[in-house]
Image (cartoon, rainbow, N blue to C red; front, side):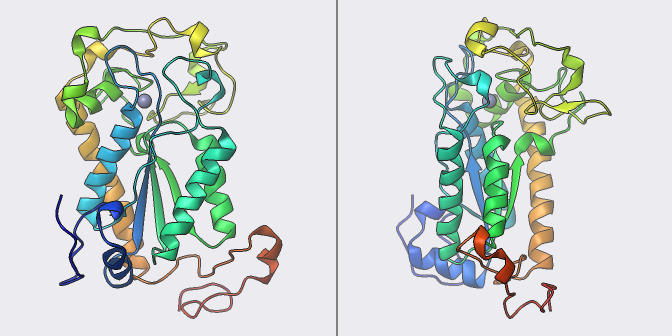
Length: 303
Ligand SMILES: [Zn+2]
């Protein structure tokens, strides 16, 4: 790590918010780039071959690459996340309640907005849309422009890189781990696994799979029994098919999509512009009184 500096030549000391001084972060948001990325992961069992922090390490690794590629600032990543119902009770998984996680995400983004950031991209590496999507819409009411994403939204790899669709601690996630932090993955302990499911698997779109008519997002139901009873190995899929090369291809593609998204936001909304055009910190009860800022007309169109 480097020593702190004063803000010179439009340079930040680090892509990570927590490694810069407050002065540098505020000046960077005001003068260079006001896009902030919030990486989100989870502490969750990932079989015998991967660490419980896998999703958090994946989020950190992807977010750092996107921040370096685009100039977006990366906010410190909370280690813990929220979890669908069937993860609860699984040893090695430490879920936050939905309310805690929604509050956590909202507080971090509100705090970064105080420092001058106006555009927020959540990069989650764990299935937790049950809290992140709620947080996004609550933040929207407050006038905070936020996009919630899970890295595999940008994957849609229908077996061009992977042999199988992505699930959990499997070929996909293990490949990403082998690429980003190989020292923590023990392939000698990798073994295939999977659960039964309560309805036929063809109704569900796998994480990162391009969907077809009649396929439900895998968060839209209580599709399985609790993992503690349903899973033998803590794995869904076959991690023995994982390679570092697959991980590199997946991550390179995903980072490229994020970079395109952020470049579009930056080119459409210059530094200092809030795309929503208003701030409404008191929340829902005052939404009828929203008035737009100096950059937008009375109908919220960018001037
Ligand atoms: Zn995972």
